[in-house]
Image (tube, rainbow over all chains, first blue to last red; front, side, top):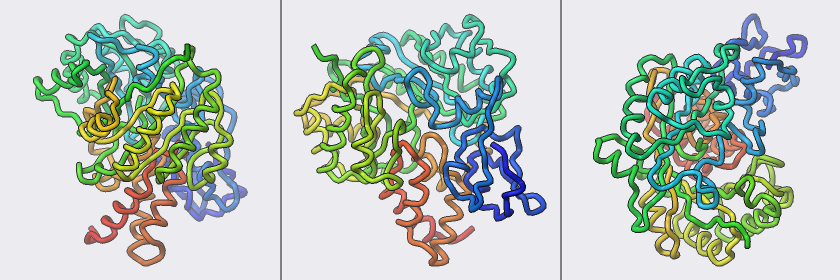
Length: 234
Length: 211
């Protein structure tokens, strides 16, 4: 995003719409810190500028990664957004099977943002603990070596509002992975939101939930529940 | 993963906050899903959702009206409806079960409460997604109270500064908590934001002593 200085009247109304505080008013003109800006376009979409001074510019590699991961309107492989269908369609796809758990690390969320360099620290943790990276995920497409979790070096300094690493692990390696991720949090200059996916058993119990309970790993009382209504027409 | 997952707040505050999402599975049932999604929105209408949205062709209430969102929904959309009442959620789940649209449906809310609602209508939770919270440099986060509002937009488009700006306006009598909530709701273009819960949270912040 850029500010057309000719149009900008310096009112500063755009400032509070930036999720990563990249906009400042300097000498009565809004200025966008290009290192902090994640190209989410929220400032423009909010239509708060009385002079339409906030403008998108055509992005080239590697900066276009920011927009792909941060602009809500971006479509990636048929799915809007940063992640995949994950458990949302699991009743149809069977992506997460019995005996396995999904783990997602959403780097930079909520609203702190993350560089891909920080994100790579966590892909490396997953790689060290036998996690299988989700194929249809934008972040996975940036990993150049899945055995190490190494990300394309040309994008490491790009910053995104959030980037979601999605993996599957055998259920008996869930605790090990979660604990390794939490332990690695100290190395980061950002935050991440962590979540776990698991299929329910017939009796309504959930193996991942039981493992987390047993290990004393806290989780929120609210979560997402696929209620099993999906199917393919015969 | 999960723009409706990491909502923050007390159990009490999350009690009447349900986001119901439907989508098709790529490679399985995308083709012909548009009419099913439109029916989904029509079914939801009778249970008084406080928000609806899809982020492919239009957006959410109140930026677009209900009919426009429904009419523009087509194959491959991700459709959300939000309820602030358990009875309406149960009614909607009942209607969806009866209609058997075949599209996957995900309910975000208190897990035990959602499981109980499902049981009432004869549905079983298939897969769950649990949030383990936020790790790392938590000192970079906005305040706890602001996050109860900001995390209702999972894409992070509602900022902590914006929340404080509106709280200040409510305190000065320049707008109501409902108006503040509607204002920030417009930035959450998927329709995941719960404006009824937002208004309560704004009012509580405005009523609290200023720091």
